[in-house]
Each structure stands twice: as structure tokens, then as C-alpha cells.
Length: 474
Image (cartoon, rainbow, N blue to C red; front, top):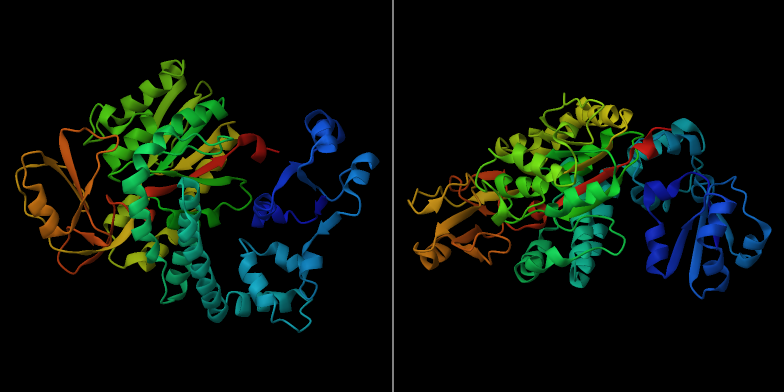
């Protein structure tokens, strides 16, 4: 079939995922010549189902149209929402089309003036009743996703959907959550995390582990910068991304290294090493060197590589591989006293400053492909009491995990503090690794905190954002 997308709705809603789930091969139509070179033989002689996605004024030759028969469709805001003012819908920043569709089902008035559509979106689409209904539906959807989840891709989709639920609950004060995902995810990680190093996606759309990020970026970009937002979860990115305006990006995800602490996972991200290979696994003192050494292993010269901290990072014309570390979100996490609602307010303020978006635009303007990711996310916990120093653990500053010498009384600690023994995947085998159970941390008893170090969806699955210069520089 041919589908003409008149308002760029695929970019906003990703409806092609549904066609792929139903067995269609997707052809993004550029021009006649490209189609004939890449697809013609396969398209005319194959038995597969094809969907040709085309711009509204695209010229498609007669023989291709004939092959599609009567299966030619146009999708547009005017067709979908005939009782609304289309220009107002187009103008609405970051409009959630799922929310719009849910509210539109009950709209029987004519709202085709700009002001009436604006009022409808303000009062009904983003009204608390509509949002609550949507959240409840998404929770049902996620519960089905969790039941069916079998691999890292499935869990990445769960993490993204959960982040949206958590954001709406934080914004509207809705008493609902999707924390039921945590136990099945913990089971998946304990059984399967060690196998993820061997996973390579069919079309290499994302690194599986953050350890694979540098290899992925080098193989997909001649000139790139990785921005590491320390501590940024899927929840945080869902908020931050609203400040990106017309910046075109692709969202995917990667798994952080476990335990989800900065010194291990961030250094793995920038060095392409497993934690057991790091020069200094329990501190970030060697991080710059790890990044530079990794970049030079790609046959780049030292003068082509640069490592920075902060939004004022600037890269000269000789640089081909850059790294920027930004600690804002991790600082918010460790100073947070208001849980997810507090994180929402703090990250929303950070988004409003547009510091990250401005940095991205500057880098794109210099011809860099930009990647944004994180070393780990964060999760709400309740303190079960501060741990007195035992004299046997390696210092990590984490309130969610312990690294023990092998002579420590491990079984007693597991029972006393309700801890999980981690199977040492990709870690130095001379230590034992105990991690607090879901929702617990070594903070003052009863204190509600945001933290990291453990094995929850929110800590382990982090955004991996791809922003190509060629897509954004006109």
C-alpha cells in the first residue's frame, strides 16, 4: 500500500511500529530512482507486504501505484480531527496524540475555531479526568507488555512506557504507578544480564549495554560528541526532551552496567570496557584517560579527541570525537526530598533553561552528530537505616549496594538488610556484591529519597538519543 503522510504524523506518533508488528516492510519513499535501485525487484517479485510512506506531493510512477491497486491512503490531521482547528493542533508543542484521541472520542461540538480548539486541548485533552483515564489504560498496557517481555528490547519499551506514566502521575498528582514491573525485571536481570554482551541488534539501531556506546557511535558517525547526563532516567529524559523543539532525534535505550553507580557505569560507557577492565573502577579519577584511550583505539589521533564537563563545552575544528559530562540531574537526585514530584519540578526547570538544547544546537551547527545518554537512572527509595562502617567493604558512596571482601559475613548481611546477591556479571570476581532490594536504601530510617545503585527498570534502562547533523542542518 501507499500512505501519504500530510502532517508528518509518523514522526510524532511512530504509527509505523504497528504496521511492522502486522508484517509490513516499510519503504520510506525518497524518489523514483532511489526506489528502483533499492526496492523495485524485491517489491514486484517478492511475497512480502510493503507499505510505502511518502510525502504528500511525492511523485510515484504509475507502475508502482498500479502494483498497490486501490490501497492508497492519505493520513492528515484534517481527516482525523475534522471538528478541530488543524492549525491549532499543529501549533501545540509536544502534543500527546494518544491523549487527544482519547478526548476526541467524546467531542461532539464544532471546535473548528482556533480559540475553541485551544480551550478543548487545555481543559479536556490535558484535563485531569482525561489524563487519569489515559494513565489507567497505559498501566493495563504495560502489565501486558511485562507478561510478554522476553528480551532487552521488550524491557526497553516497558521502561519508556513506565516513564510516561510516572511523569503524568507526578504532574497531576495521580495516585497510580507501574511499580509492578520491578519484580519481573529483577528476575530477568539476575538470569540474563550476563548474556547481553553477546547481543547485537539486527540493524544495529542501538547499543545493548552502555559499554557498547562508543563502538556504536564510531561505526555510525564520522564526527560525534557523546553527552553523558549523569543519573538521567527515562523519566528525566521524557521531561527534558520537551525543550528540544524542532531538533530531530531518535530515541532508543541501553542497559547501564550493574551495580548502577557512576564510577562503574559511566566509565564503561566512555571507555568501551567492562567494569572489571577499568583502571580505577571505584573512582572517576581516570575517566578522561579512559575516554581518550578508547577514542585513540579507533585510530584517532590525540589532538582529534577532547573531554569536557559542563554546558559551555566547545570543540575546535580538528575534533572528531568529543565527550561532555553533565552532573545536574545526579545532583538533583542526591539532594531530592520530594520524590518524583520534586524531580519533575527540578528537571522541568532545567528543561526551561534550554541549556542542553542550546549545547546540542551548537554542536550540530559545527557538524557533529550528537548522542545523549546516561550512566544510570534513579529510583525512589525509603531508608532502612544508615549502615555503620563494617571495615570490610570497598567504598563506593552508594546507598543501594555494598562491595564485600570474600571473608565478610555475607549471609548475615543479606538477611539483616534484605539484600540481593548480584551474580558478578562483568565484575571483579574477588569481591561479593550485595544490592538493596527494590525500594530500599541505606538512608536514615523512614526517609524518602531518590537514589541509584540497584536493579530497577528506572536505574538500569537509560535513554540513548541519536541526533544526526544531516537531519538538523537543512
